[in-house]
Image (cartoon, rainbow, N blue to C red):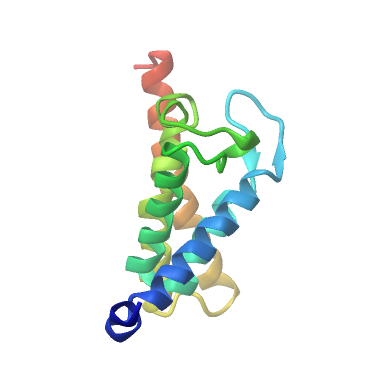
Length: 144
């Protein structure tokens, strides 16, 4: 344990764990829209990037995805397992990682202050999530 605290890994690891739990909790607050439920996840994903910065924000979302792949019920509707990443929600879930990184980077550039700049930051982050999700859905249903 001394090695973890000396190298400074414990604090970021705990932050990432807390962030991944917040994303998991926000996944359960949803509107039952099919085939992809609308949840509060995207808001929490972007807040993780803003609060943690691009690297730890992205790492937090990778941890979240890893938890779900390993069978923890962290995805919307308490789903778990790799099937969530190959189903209709897969693109949205995978889009969380670059969206958190982008939000963190934009925040570091000063885009988290003020109404219009913050709005642009959230729009950019959501655009990444939706672009990944819609591209994945189009592939699944065969849209050309």
